[in-house]
Length: 253
Image (cartoon, rainbow, N blue to C red; front, side):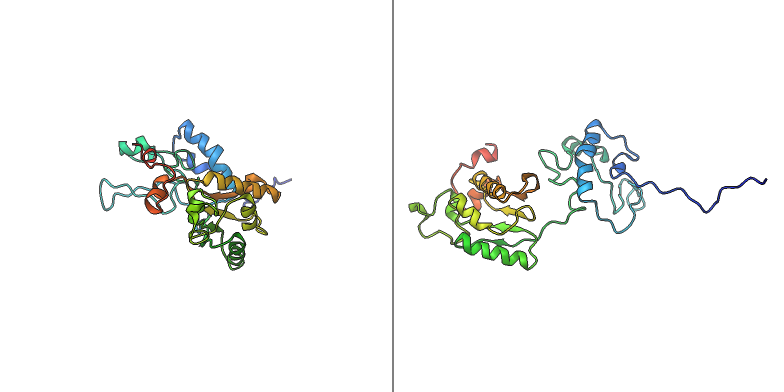
């Protein structure tokens, strides 16, 4: 009986490329880089895979066609550049990993290759009720998130009924004096579904705490809450004349 030959047209299924394989491909990653790839990069890619219009070419391509000493890389670059990627000693010394303190390479493991930045309008005026209406309008008309503008007394840490607040309440932003104000500000807005940027520095931790309590009262999971606050006292001192804290410590003086 003739022996059956395997069908040449049958091919083995393609094994999907591991999402962090190019961190290791053709490289000798350090233990720190391996840990970053497994603990930081992999969860990021699982949540928001990088968007590519074409298959990624080889991790590194070098050309000396124009300048003999130049090093060029492909448009679709490797997921990770490190100090090992450059011959310049000073750059190798300061090289850090993305999404790791002190965040000199950004707060996102893949930059904006997996998730585009949100588009939002800086908004806040008068009372929490009026600003809440504005927020709902913005979200209904395509706003990708919220950006809260606070009035000067709130930025300075004053209540609206403080003598120093006279003439400034609700003028250049929304007035927030209490947790109740924050609840009104985000009434009917699901904080798990949006991201919120709060342009405030000195009292930022207090406003952030209020925001988390509002989310908690909505039944939201804190792990799903996302947004930004600020920690730049020097910017407030120079740009908005907020003299709550002296600027010298911020400058390292």
